[in-house]
Image (cartoon, rainbow, N blue to C red):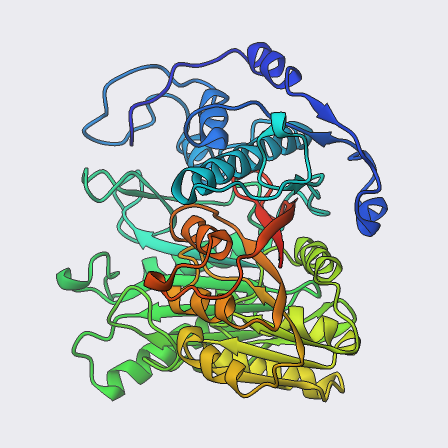
Length: 504
């Protein structure tokens, strides 16, 4: 673990937060009135260096004293459960109202930094909709709270490793770092963002491992077999479990025996208490394996999870991306829909579309929906969802956006108006995707959804807004960042989705 910070009294933290300014402009967006009651004001933060949420979260952790980095992990300053909570959910000690203040301050800081980057690197200012004294790149709207605060995750991935007691068959989350050689695996049933069902499945998987004669695979090159467990649930309580297994040199017959044993455990053994609706098994020789690299094998139950969202029935495959907070995702997608401003003459281009929910939820208001997604199963889910819900004006393409997008745009007529939505992974968009968006003049509106506006994502925004640059093949007119809406999908953590509206 990194060096532990000096403890700050809670009353001091509250005083600091109380100094955060209030900016109350209700009704800025049509859906503002639909926010949960009690969150009618917008909290603005002050400027500080570094990651604001991490700074505050670290200061508010109880029982931490200044000390050198320990050579090994131990319950030196609180229980293992509290230490894990402080790492996975750093804001858990704060009330949700205080969490939103901290998160909003962080989003304001991001936009202030973004404005500085654009001015410094490009020598121009972005058109702003707020007073210059605020130094924001755009109008910052109120943060939209999550409708669900505790146990909101619909997907959790649990690791297998040595626990605090030294047992190598412990299922939970990591504390420590591999670099320092102090990693331990701590059970996670106390974490506020993990639902009880997920913790229950993890606990029974641990029971199974401890009665199995096969060793866990802690590090690939050191042998062992049993690895991660992923649990997915929907709002109806259906539960899918995915077990990752390193086959080593086992024969197909030996693998079949292990599949039957784990299947029996969760159908008629102690694990039956979990009430799984499906169990998958994946043979994996690397940390993350796609379905194409190593197919997910259904041992029993339903092959998919289904969810109800925005009047759509959505199909979700084992490895398809779906926002981990279902209720929060509905708020996020409504926000995106409001900002796109689509109409019956608009083609909606949904880049990094996952299971296609954003595009399909707006299909009835557009001329056509075009989706692009890397994961083949997710595209199949999007097509199924479109067909099941009677949506006929959509098409989805599988592959890398940087390879598909340029050709897809060339096939469209110049006179057609296109609104683009991008929801990339934390790594941001490939630069060729930015080039295609910049250079296609029919795209006049772009909505960019980011859960981490740092690194490559920051570069994405700068390249969208900078003057034409032939050297970078950015020939189209620049976009102007107009509005930003923070949407909290991750209570108790520092993370927040930021929805950015660009026009030109």
